[in-house]
Length: 499
Image 1: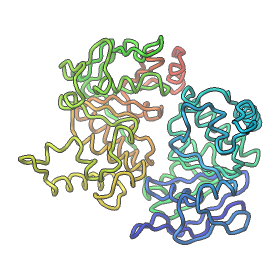
Image 2: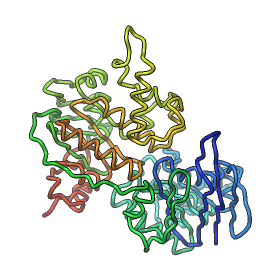
Image 3: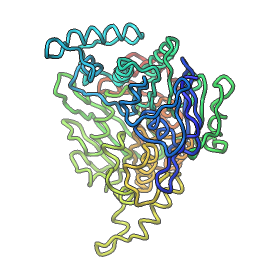
Image 4: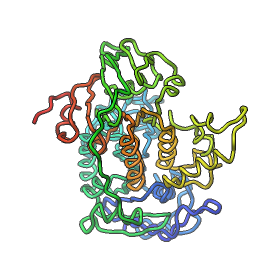
């Protein structure tokens, strides 16, 4: 056995993140690690990568006991990790990012030509070609993911940990990444894959280990299981199959007319986007990241000034209005980037939950502590948010638990209009079931929802109408009942839908 983690336990005071966890990895194997948010997956991998020390337990490589005091120790033992949030320097070239820390020299200076040649050869060797001279800032997210993998390969990694590697990729990029991982495994590299996407796991993994509440609930051969069994192992119960009613035919809630945002280059960021979201419907926006979805969200919510066109909410013109005014007129917003837009990491769970709700819980300018605790505590229970207490700082919650807190907070606004941007990014199947159910409930009660998601399965599952964006414009509209992933993918790439 290449790697053995034997009875790993990790405790933080009274909280146990991992409890007697056993995990093994064979040479050339792709071993998936799955579980609900806060189940202990990332903690276990942080221990393997030297970012945490276990409270007890043993790690063995090729049968020999090892311990890592830092990631440098892990790298020295040929273990590499690609984190969920990329750790690249945008202004550096691909070659500079890959060789950093192991730069080839020419005299006393950095040999850029040698670095580019090394990276070009590395890409060819592992079937992941890149342009070494291209700046990372100009790379798609899929290409950045490839750069991260090449970086750990350049460090000599034989064991590669991938934390949610497809979370921000398009379907085409996901397919390319899975092919690349399989190719590397065939060359003898071994992978530990943390992911919530069970269908992808079933496609690529050799074995799958499931964690729940810090304990292993099962390790199975991928060929002997299915997504339903994995879901049961993850959440401890059968998942509810959601049913959708027919869409309502209510009044317009959001009306965006010819919205334009000029870019620094020749093409506009938004080139005359018009759309309408009515009472009782979910309108999905699909598109490859960087094609105007973010700018559209910011234009509607008041975060970005528009150069042309208008935005109306419930018939009132809110073009150029402040974020505060637009929210008061009836908008709630689940942001696409929870860390940049959704939470204050140094604030507590309760303080983050209070955002946007303070007016309901104060009298004569004094906040009501019991009322706030009751409100946020109810969300923690209903959405299964794992936190030590309501006084825990947001930065100590897992990404998925933060996401659930934001979703709960914004849905509790009970506004007529909701922007749901990547509402289930980084959450487990149990939380996804809850969030999808809450979005459909809001829609069935007459709410209007603009859903922006990179997950086509989510778009197809929840939307009544689907709009596709490409290069800052809406290039197609499809009825969700008749749309296919192939049609949407073609439009996302700038083609025309057929069929």
